[in-house]
Image (cartoon, rainbow, N blue to C red; front, top):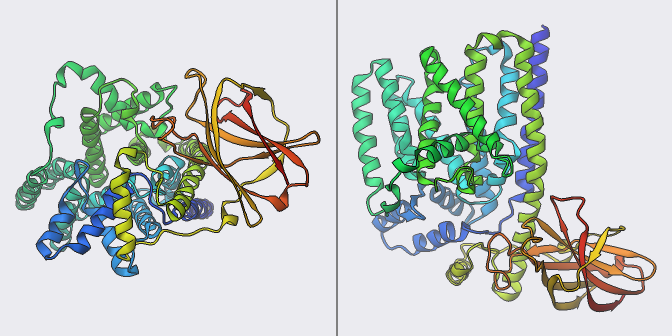
Length: 550
């Protein structure tokens, strides 16, 4: 009875955290394109609708997109278009996140101790729906492709291992979808063939091997494979480090890179320990999925620049793999290690996962807010000026603008419109530790407009010194007179026309100030730059010379 109540308690906690995750996804996944959404999705939809015959449409579904074939995301786009009549990024993002939930259901199938299934589910939810994955799941980019392809791959492996003819056929079809959805899907072939050997299913092994390997060969037809080779033998130590860092990328801390390295080594040791103890015989599905993840880690480590702890080894789109490494290795330990038969030790794992989940979600929530700001300002610029799409690739903006106009003219997509009230910046009184740098801050107040009861202030600012400049700076506007100081945090913009550097181009600002919230008086306008990481650093300020009578 006591164990039952504990199970119910963990199930309720799991439901609360899952609901919280999907609420954040709903809050941030607005129907506005950002970064590589445009070329990978909108351009495809325009050409697909304009295609004359079915052969051309199939070719578009399977064509190369940034070195990958993107069958999964393109199919999601077509599904949303056919159901809604238009492309809607919010619905696309929500559907893919449902597949992340589906991955959690498949992980539940690996649980052996049903008496403690509530604790297992809670641990899975904390690691699967944490803030690290939230960074991928609110933007229709390649991170979503990874989420979808992992679900399809895991489901395919699960069906193939059931040893039922209808399940085998379904798993075979899903394996082809996985292969053409990202490229990583073909890495399921070795573990599935190995599992067929263990199950002594020779005919199924031959059938699956011929069809899947043939599909993998055709995957590379027409792709640029020059970057797949190279001299990797001279870089084996660096590649090994990249391999372990990729496995532990969910615990990626740029200034403490060895945290990810150590995590990857521990997970790999647990995997090898399980092989020597023949754990795979008791949970074949779990081991097949984990083997697929390890082969993926090898492929990604070999394909990235071999630099220890380089940013290329732990981009945000791979964090979902790090989550699954943690979950599956934790499952192996809890199921098979004698030490984890002590319940107190088992309860320690969700406590650590809870701590990690709260910290990562708090960090990524702010990142999500900034992305939402960028999207909304991008929508404003597009509707009023027909430019500045918030992309990280300014050289591609002319093509992106062309396709976005095409989608709107063809009625395939409509950019959301927001009232000025929805852009309103928060204004409050606060004393700041300010340090004036009249010659150290480059800035421009490009426009001051009055619309209805709002004051619009637009421009850019950044620290001139490279040593002082940081990527993680927030821009603040100060309205100051002899009596008080009002602080306004504007929306930020990417301004590649000012700084041609992806990491430092977030120097633009766009503020909508409600004049009715400002006490009457004369105010001087000051611009401040404040670090989000070094909290004790003063706010570097400059006076613009602008004066407002409000």
